[in-house]
Amino acid sequence: MARAQKKSFHIIYFFLQPFFTLLYYLKNFRKPEAKNVMWLFTIFFGFTFAIGKETQNSDITRYIADIPLFHNLHLSFSGILAYYYASPEIDILRISLAFIVSYFTANGFYLIIVYGVIYGFFYSRNMWYILDRLKGRTKTFTRILIFCLFLIIPIWGLNGFRFWTGAHIFLFGLLPFLFEGKKKSLIWCFITPFVVHYSFLAALVPLCIYLIFGNKIKLYYIFFIFSLFISSINITQFNKLVDTYAPKSFAEKSAGYRGKENVANFTSGKGRYNREKEVWYSKFFREIQKYTVAMFLLVFYWSFRKSLSTDGELLRLLSFILLFYAFANILSSLPSGGRFVVVGNLLAFSFLTLHLQNNIVNRDLYRVANIATPFLVVTIIISLRMSLYFLSLMSLIGNPITAIFSFGDNISLNDIIKGL
Image (tube, rainbow, N blue to C red; front, side, top):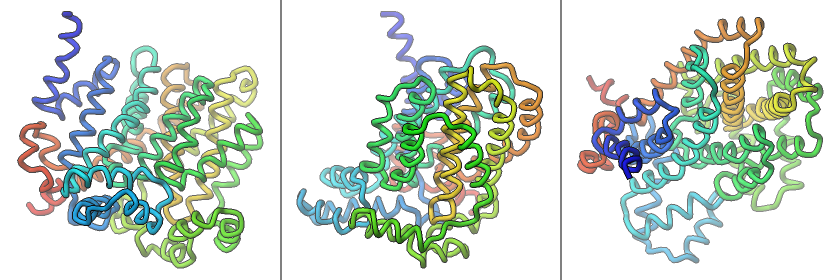
């Protein structure tokens, strides 16, 4: 009984001050309550979510706008199906959630809380899948990698709920397979494109190739090197393949991502796919991560190429990451395709964090870590700066009681700072 009471204290602390409770448990991440505190805070973040002036055109505003529309139209199930067939979406989770929430309320901000419940679960489980496997006293460089791990696809990924939730669900199934060989967990990977975001059909391509051909690491390494120098996909040939072999509904609904006009806008820096381009630092954020990861992977391969045949886990991890990252590099020339590089970053950083913490670091990797440190610190600073577009003051100083009074009317910290 005493032990159960002790475990409940984190709930009390959280309801008094969520943000500082989160900071405490991030510092003490080995405590069993830590991942659930992260989950709770993600829900609270959804409760206090802010849409700033510079993010008015983001996906989340469209998702919120659907709630009063559905509510006021009193759509039946058949009406929702008609809406789904007319929408550009193939996956079903987002519209299903909108329909359920709209049945009870016309306030779209309740939807973000629901998003927080789902997103926070998979986000916290993925983070602690890695943290729970760290051995020994945490090294200084490992702390930097952990910071990066949390910020690659962070909790403010709620802003792009479909894709970033899909990313975490995909990795929720992929990580146990790669680190433990659990093939049953891959069901989550195969569910993701049909339920959460259909673009993850592209992520299934390297996964299926790996499942068929296995650890062909030399081939994947050459493919990875080749992908670093590819500037673009031949969109005409790509569209021809999709239109010829993909189901008609998929071809029609995916046209918004691969149409020539959208690709031209993406290449020239125009249109909805480069919403962050006007913020100078966001343009460099992913590039720094991408080439830092590339540098580590190249050194890993050359450092361990002679011993890979005797280290099954390292061979499996490095093989798949090289293959997946190569595909992600190629897809990055398509509108929104660069998001798969971000998924590759999270996968690679998961591997780097565990390996560099749990093993003796050789001289080459030690040098790369020293070179990478200032660049990774820059990405941490940039990511924290980007959080201000969605964080509100209530997210930091409020609690579930006080947040009720500002629900749906929170102002982003970015807007507050700019208004000073």
